[in-house]
Image 1 (cartoon, rainbow, N blue to C red):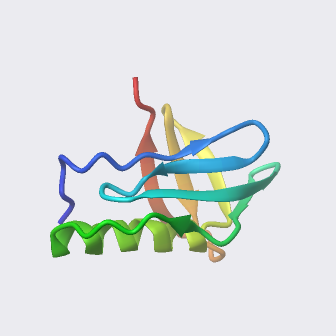
Image 2 (image 1 turned 90 degrees about the vertical axis):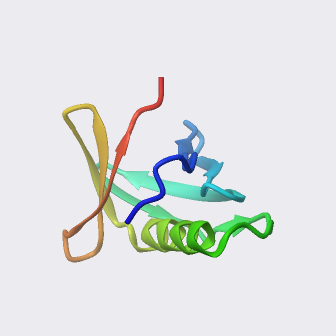
Length: 95
């Protein structure tokens, strides 16, 4: 399952700079966006020890970003897809 109270975030700036929180650690990368295609450069992060379940969830989220190849906006949510067109994440915009 998903740990609901983990503050997982993703911010992509207009210059392609990527930053966010995996729920435990801060991460950073660079996004290349062409039309609906998107890819993330190698992702770096801080390294704070958190409970194992949270660390596992964070690792899975960062792995998903690394596998992302395209995106679309669907009903106000950012939907990420892998190289086979399979949905790998659906993210809500924070207010």
